Length: 474
Image (cartoon, rainbow, N blue to C red; front, side, top):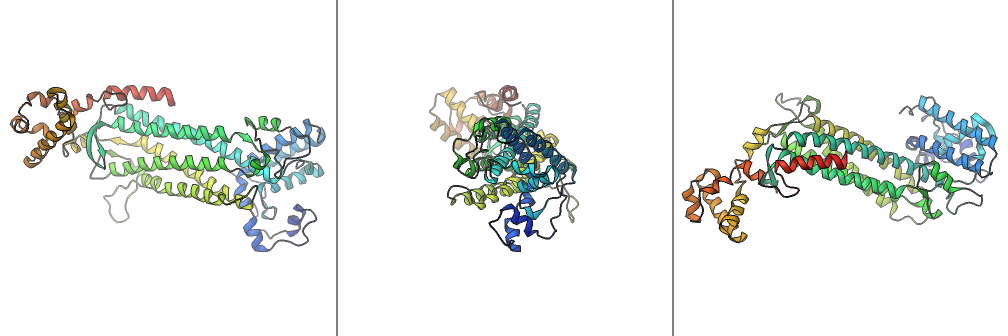
């Protein structure tokens, strides 16, 4: 975004700052006051939203007869020129003017003269910033929802490809039951679906316009808040002017939803880190998403996954930051609320990066079915199938079947063999009624194919789930 041009190192201009406050202040601010008070270094990123809201406000002022059509037209064309200058990289942002609102208005005044002063009729920087920031967060939510959908699409492609690829399922990071790799990936598709749902719900709730709340109490001018709300794509104006300027729930909800997204990405990243280790070798990432070591030439490090995992802390920290900042604020606006933007901007940029990296890694990864199958030879992973067999064929209560299976597993462990390789005599020494039929349920493929309950890991169910997820999410 070409908005880095400017004079951040320019000397302070107390005269310009004083003009902003009219005749109330006789002296300029202390240098430290300018440093702590200025927000243009980051809120310049709201320029598009600020100009859009100003154009909607100006059109409404004309429509309601509050300002004349000639002044309104000059304001509209002037704002278009300001936006063009910013996007061309030629706009000079002035720290002495504090924020994006005053920078835009000052340049508008230079372009069209005194008519620019009419733009601020019936509004305040309080409802300006509330509107601008709400629009910015809404745009970010829409972008991240699309990025999550793209990640789901990548996961679904891999899940379909590996609907019948066997791998161990884990509880407590211990071998538990055989599943398919496709089934495992589909779990993340569902997580991301909930993430998208939270963002959609957050967007619906935030889609009310604060514009027209003015400083806090509304205005005596005959404004049409429904007109400006509709022009900016809001569903309606906010019902209470005090709430309009002081609410930051929309940003907190966005950061909360983002924190859950980051947590889900971190979980997937952690699994990818594990799966690429020599102890697992379940997947391989190409050179595009790995790095080497400066001293160990054999290394291939999954740094992209590790960084996605690490960046979750930034996102979660930003949520806590904003909650703590807001928790002690009385109604209505306090300058503390200026601190809402940097964490939100950083979170959105972090999600942009992490979602792009994770989508790239999912597309890039190559599974190793042989390594996944080999890993299942170590932990008596079909023991539950044996217990279920005893229940179905011998009519045992499950708790009795569980106890007998545990005894058989202990015997296999002592002999150093897998359950499917344990001699029938060993089974019968524990439970004489067991027949050779038991071996039909101890194979890995049979164990997976039998899990046909809805949402289960049987390849037939995985293929159905992929088709269903494509219909629901893509």
